[in-house]
Length: 202
Image (cartoon, rainbow, N blue to C red; front, side, top):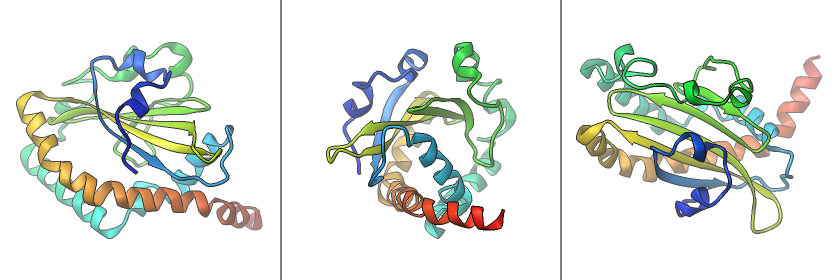
């Protein structure tokens, strides 16, 4: 479900001090029935198992395939357009206590980890169009459980980057985010079965 930007900006996340020069583009919530205040790591594990990029729906995989193909043809994703070349990685300005919470590696996703705490995590991506942060937070929901929230923070690369963000907005709202909601919420529901399967293999 789409939320107002204040659902992210009004909370005391550590990301605010690191990303003052980024704009809050989207805020989205994901239902996790029965979740408690300490279940954020459980949700992250469930997402890695059943909610990864490799498990996306066919329409989302098609959109990303088209995007990567365009990027390859137009040079949007070359090394010189990414982290450490065109833009300074957010991780480079992250305090040591946060930087030590993750490895400086990727797990198959196009995003690079920045930090991971008990109630929030951040990952970043940069190319010729934009420098973006995916922030995940764990917050109390209206029914007394906790829920996952995702905020997309962006720093467009000039006029071209802003035009690109405007052009892909309908695809984000109509296809990508709804599919991601179904996928991540299903990953939370299926986490118990996945854990049982893992124990059975031991």
